[in-house]
Amino acid sequence: MYSQKVLKHFQNPHNYGEMKNPDGVGRVGNLVCGDVMWVYVKIGKNKKKEEYIKDIKFKTYGCTAAIATSSMVTDLVKGKTIQKALSVSKNEIIDSLDGLPPIKIHCSILATEALNEAIYDYLKKQKREIPSAILAKHKTSEKEQEILDKKHKNCRS
Image (tube, rainbow, N blue to C red; front, side, top):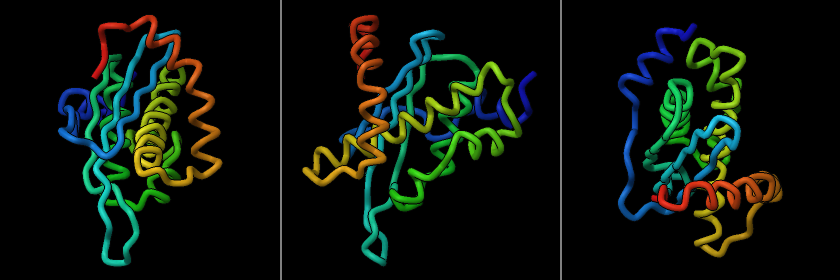
């Protein structure tokens, strides 16, 4: 059912845990399955003065695929510029894990959404203009966040 890579990331997730003083935090969840993901980012500047993901961590409450996709997205974007990090797709995550069962594809989407939300949060805190693509994704998940907040009052980071 699950590839060896999925099982490895589930059993020994990379970049797992909370981050002290993150520059941005993203939280998303799936109302149907109940998975909830947090992504924490620290942003730095490289030699070209481009902002990049200096450090990234995650905390996920969910199934094997949810934890594995969260772990994989952190591996794929750590050290990348914000722009490159935002271009990581669900298909890249799935391919990097050597596949996911069709019923678990939504976990890879959640992982990209959590990353998007963390970057949105960073830009908002910096009082920077938020690109329309990031803003559109944020608005899409905003309504679900309100419902999740009501369902998980005591489950906040």
